Image 1: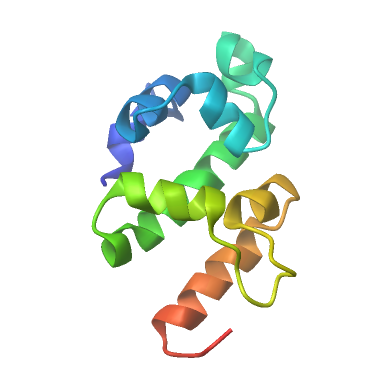
Image 2 (image 1 turned 90 degrees about the horizontal axis):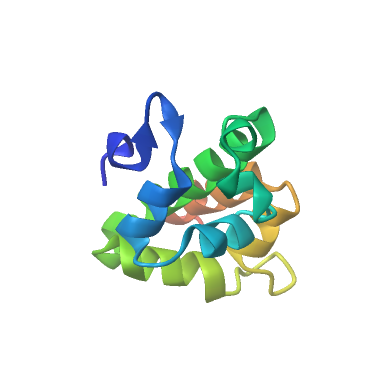
Length: 116
């Protein structure tokens, strides 16, 4: 999916992410490790923390989407598939814990044929 599909006015828009993933803005906030206020109040949507978490989630989903064939299946993987080498934590849990870069490195290693 093109990143522009998730944006509005130069910022990641929780509403657009939710529409693309057929869920709610509140669910997007939860899966990115944000509170409900972060996706409902305009000034919070544009905060560095909110935008960083939304960007991390979108980057990971975009990176694995070709493997699964759709953003919806990639989103399901992000939320529910335990990653080997991370004590059974999912990509969502790792992002919520501030470890998005490790998830991206893991996906890159898998794509390169390295078994994590």
